[in-house]
Length: 469
Image (cartoon, rainbow, N blue to C red; front, side, top):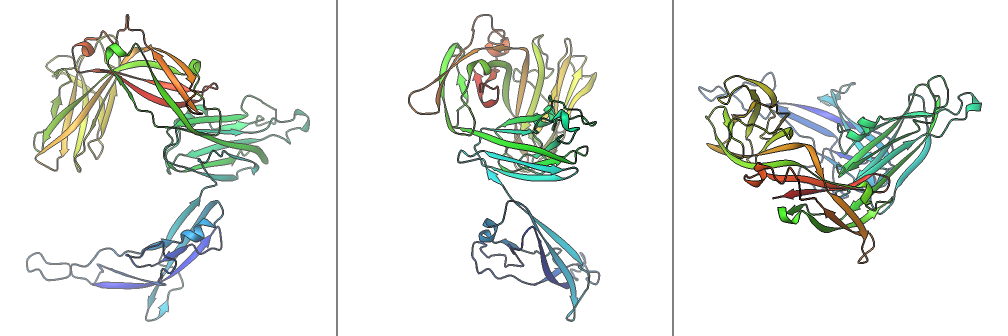
């Protein structure tokens, strides 16, 4: 087996603290302060001079094709680092007979982010500063698990019409929500630019603020980066981040005769803004029929048509049916199925066209379509890879109602504890199309909906799923 040796050198950016230890033993505990590091690395693997194993006579070598470099982060030094971006580059210089190459053979970048703030301890994050044209101010927020809602606002001050554009500001906000690729949908929908002037310097007051909120924000480090717009040399801005955390609320599952009225409690544990639920801004609606069915598929079965919860291979839908969503999932590791949904002209499913497809590398598939009158629909499953002779999966079909049915809410503060609220709900049983739907009355379908609680300003606080069945 061939090998190569490299001398290691680490260059730090963002601070002078050497918070990284390179080349530590695999079994070491990084919590220890006396962790020994190495200044060299030997890579063992299959080189050009190595003869592969001959399958006939079993001669040759079967070397490892990968070597590992283990790292430790010094938590004590990291704790003292200032908030923001930090980085290190590990450079590996090839060494032969005690001589080292002048240029690195390869480099390994290491990135470290220290958040400016954590959404906890009833403390809001607020910063007011300036950012230059084409420049970026980076802000990081640690969102712990269990936060119910996160509210973000970016605001620029009004411009003074008398100063001929000198006080104009314009910034844009980029948010990566707990990961490096996910952007909050509300931010995309509302736009990310706040500015006090047009490109020609005329003051405007209808774009001073960017606001968005997200229920159940993804835990982790949130990137909130403020970019200076190119039209303005310097832009003043204020970035505010608030949060609220409610105690866990169990989903409501009630019998049909009990949906007429009921109550439950909501407890606000932490908040940096007025997060009291307000009845007139909240909503209660039942909006879909839903059924979950268990299915099995064998390794060599081929593509099969999965019947509906009522046993229909050729699925049909009533006039009240809106968007239909079909999802599959499985707990079996390694199972990979694909889903195709066809719209057909006949009950025998002979003349069809695809209306939805899903082909992930797992058993988690999803497709949706809007059914048409007089058409038949077939949900086909292809067992692309089945690790056992027989595999099970769950299919969920959700049939949205074209006209969701609304209930009513009343909110009152309780005297048992500060931040506790009692939610009373009511639903009109008479003339409900969902409650009288044959799929619900005679079949295995349940009625689903939710109660959305919002505050006086209309900020969505938390969502309580409702199931009738």
